[in-house]
Image (cartoon, rainbow, N blue to C red):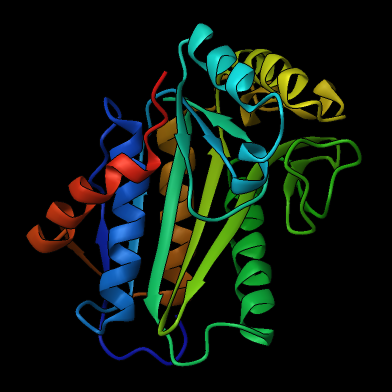
Length: 256
């Protein structure tokens, strides 16, 4: 995190039994960073089964049916802060929130953060044997120019940003295991939303590297960020931020 003074706080707190709270933690950390109450914070955690919808999804006629489809597959539907369309992940994935106070969070800085994150994730995946490449995959779900894929064919990492005055949040998900489960829920969710995509673009890193563990990818991601932005200072989510996240979780929870 160029330009920062002192160590970056590394937190590992996750709430897999309450995906809406997991999303809300990133929201709360962004608020705190933008207010100058906390410094740069990197949160790396293991999620529970989640379909994180974007604001664009909520505008589509099939949104209610898509939420129901997520639940039918055992995935908790939530409304995320950044990003476009639905992304699905579970305990076979690694999630990351990169939160920082910033005086200039938009413009060129936005694209620089996307590019930097894509390079870091691609490097981390290559370190564990994945043929990781950066660039949009034709027909991918929730498409983006900074997708990290396996061989340019299967999306493995999606990134999204939320920027407010004084701060930024870059969120990312790495699908390591359970690609078939993720693909199945996305097929039904995207069908309900009326989104055209190629299901073959959904998968997991283990598909190309049999036996690859979530722990190994998690270590590789942390090492990549440490090499770029360290030193890290291990810690926990501050009490004020966690209390605020519990308040905000209602905004991200999608009730039946």
